[in-house]
Amino acid sequence: MTTYSVCSEAFDVETDLNGLLECIADSNHETRSLQADYVNDLAAGVDAFFLLFAGALVYFMQTGFAMLCAGSIRSKNVRNVLLWNLLDSCGGGLAFWAVGWAFAYGGQDDGSGPKTFIGNTDFFLMNGLPRMEEWFFQFAFACALSSIVAGTVAERCKMTAYLFYSSFLVGFVYPVAAHAFWSTNGFLSNTTSQPLFGSGAIDLAGSGPVHMVGGVTALVAAIILGPRIGRFYDDEGNALEEPGEIPPHSVTLQFLGTFALWFGWYGFNPGSVLKISSGNAGQIAALAAVNTTLGACAGAVSAMFTSTIVERRQTGEWTYDPVYTCNGCLTGLVAITAGCATVEPWAAVVIGIVAGWLYLLGSHILIKLRIDDAVDAIPVHMVGGAWGVISTGLFTTAELRKLAFGSDDHIGWFYEWGRGSGNFTLLGVQLIAILFIVGWTGVVMGIYFLIMKKLGMLRMDKIEELVGMDISRHKGAAYNENDNPRKEDIEELMSSRHGSKHGGSQSGKTP
Image 1: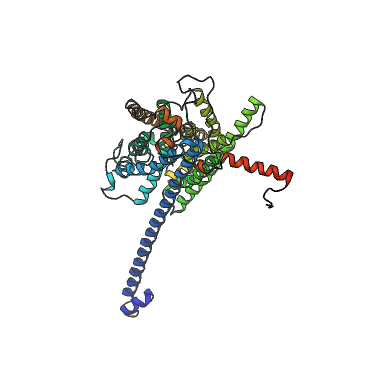
Image 2: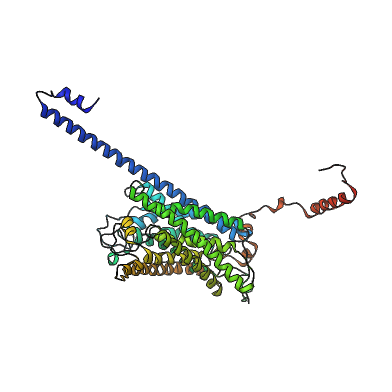
């Protein structure tokens, strides 16, 4: 039934035309209001699904970390490191539910309130439920962070030490960094009404508060924990003239982990836009996906060919290192994470190329300093994360910052020169953000690991390290070698085949 037919029954067109017109106008207004409510409700549902889907992709990165770590170490510790990665989700998830979310985002307002160092409400999600999809998305971020350190401390860190560290990092250290960058009351936030120096830091998805926090933690842990036996020192503690080679037991798992992480990054970066129900949000998320792709590609190619050229100059041989290629790809992904929504695609390629070079340099420096990192998490996440924060301060354009964050007062330093100003504000804030992460994470985690070392809770016994954690603590090896054929059976098979070549089949049968 049309609006006119309904109103014409109540008002006669000849005797009460004004009443009829008012009825039609009121009905149309009510219809438009209902339509607006429906559209808003639909948009909220689409945004919620977008975050849930993106969060699931980010959580899938746990598979990538697990496979990468497992492949990068010796087979005698595979069960151990896989269990660690599972506990990153379990222990870390409980810690983020209990206090982590509250410390990161609890009590934030519309940005008009005072700056705060840490959140103070919503513990155990009890003081008024937040949007559940936001909690899930941020939980996936927090768990990804804690897995960064697993490979660095693998093969020598005690089980209890790792579980305590993971919960502490996810429940306290990371939330403070996340609060500083992403809470509307954080001192580095660009969404507050009075951002630092009128700009605030730009880090859409976490080159700083996620990857640098994990990388700095890995560095501190590696220094305090010490290297694996046989890497830089023998089992008596004597320094080796040359670093000992401890090769990965499965390059296949390393590649599987790299692909899984790259796949998950499409939730990590585009998902950090947080909404998808508007044209602008879709445009920002699409740019983030494109730049994520280009940063990964450029980082992998840069690391592989640069290492090939260096090897050629040193040995005269052309070689192509698959591990350097994987880690160059991951460093490119880490580096583009901060500026994926505010830099042009060509700049993403430049950022990825430099990230590949910085990874190789960082990995080389670690060996020179005798710091043992089985998966090179320190150059990938700490060095790559720092470059990501800095490069955002160099390459952010006015148009893209305006689109993503609503302001173009302060942009990348290279573009500021194009304005004729050389304004250093954004780059300066980015450098302050790096110093904050290094200072906060390094000091707090350093004290934490030193206390655990003093209490004898950090490093496993020498004999357990030599035997491996799988047998000493996890009821057996990861791979069942008992299923392998016996040596004498293989010799009998080969002997029978040799005999059949010269005297026919001994069994009288043909294969």
